[in-house]
Length: 498
Image (cartoon, rainbow, N blue to C red; front, top):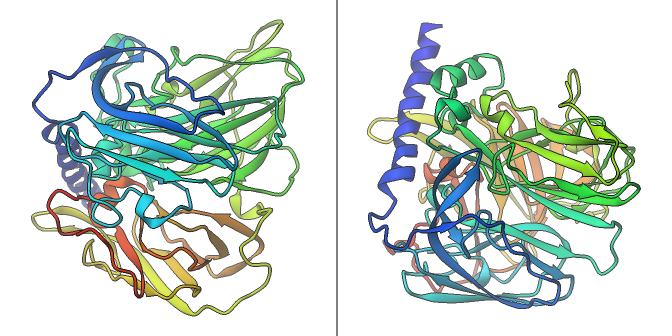
């Protein structure tokens, strides 16, 4: 036990140093451009095709008498909610008014390589005072999000992200709400709920769920759309309305949510629609970078809550009020016990990439690991190397590519592939009966997955862990199409894609 505690303490020390660097040392000393912003994010209507996203630093009101500095797109956390209808073209001009380089990555979008927003891989970082215009036409409706990919472990942590919703031309729902989940390290006094120090998180780790132990030690506040409970605005529905809820995890640890006794159906994973399933009241588990859409018909006669079931003291921050028109009374926060989480491997995508077994032209084994390194602290590795020394996967256009992801560490690794969707074909060596299409899969300790995709989008693309602290410390690799030459230099000191 003493050895285990010493190991955990060593991990905590290494990660705390990294977190403190992200939260403090990387923050520019210039404070002149910080302004007071307390309003909710503005919303783009369907007619918007051209917009401007301007980065700035603000003093953000997180609710519950907590405020702190945030880096933002258009002055809010999360940034401007962008909504388009399927088939429209998006033209977004990024203007950088922060004294640090930034970019925008359009997470989950299959788009031309030069629009992917990864500095040193697809573009040069946008320097202070400069701008860059992203133009692309989304191929599929669904829930996406956007965030900086320049020193993303720090910049996303500070708030540089926002939701991107592509609505279908024919909707299946009456109302549509987006909830962006995140974690923060903020100054909190005893009156508004401190009590979330190392001892609490050590207790959580020893209780069994250790996949998030590194991130659990680093944050003390959870938010939904930039606010903490009880200041999260309620979602208001009419009785008998068909409701779609879109959950986006912009943080670095998974979150488990209960919808009280409201039955629902999962209708999309990572913007990929799934076939109709039986209603459930099971818990939703949402990995870092992942998006899950659900739908239900509002039949409750009482107000209720969506609430975090995370084994973390900050879980009480993540409580979303649901208000039903003409409801008789407020329902107390439900006691949820002995419920399973929704198993994604039991769901089935409506539009599989492959309808039958196919032979791969290229195969790649990706061993995900973690090891202490003298002088650097904790490295997160792919095939025992850290980026940019991780092996590059060289492929040809139209190759069928199979990747085996195996987690040899004690940490969760939500692995995200840029520029492509992939189909999960097996878990822990057992073939899946139903095809599941995603762009991110959370590989937990001792788990393995086989995924397969078609190389139909030439360029250089990154494949990395979306616990961005893991990516910063090495868990990133490149996929390179043979014959493609990148117009930018990954070794330029201003380009930091991790």
